[in-house]
Image (cartoon, helix red, strand yellow):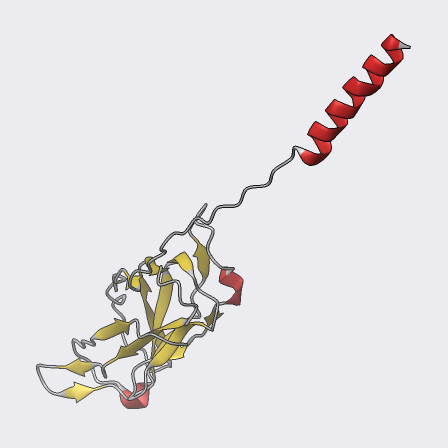
Length: 183
């Protein structure tokens, strides 16, 4: 009987310590997360291949180098990359090529490997004419898209020449790439 009472007593004490002995504690922990500024490296713009007029419609190409786009703001506000070119002008005689002679192909974009960036496939890419008053938004990340770091791959500019519009000469354009905020 003493052994029975000792066993019941021990089980009762263990049960009380397990059931009533668990105390929960809670503590708050905070952190401040700060955003940074939008950042874009400037792409290089190559020279166009020389062309000899032949009386037919022709084109010549130049390469746009790869560049990076980074959105560490932490706002989800989106962003866009805009490209515009001046009209091609021959400074020696003042000849100009018509507006909308220069176009860019839609760029390709990918997340920097291992960056944990938003899905690059959700970023809109557009190609088209850039040598006009409006230029062209070539990349656009909407709300809650484009957060992180991306590589925009090399691309091609194409200058389209029509015999009726072109006089022989050495032509120059200035290509501007800007990174305004907002989609």
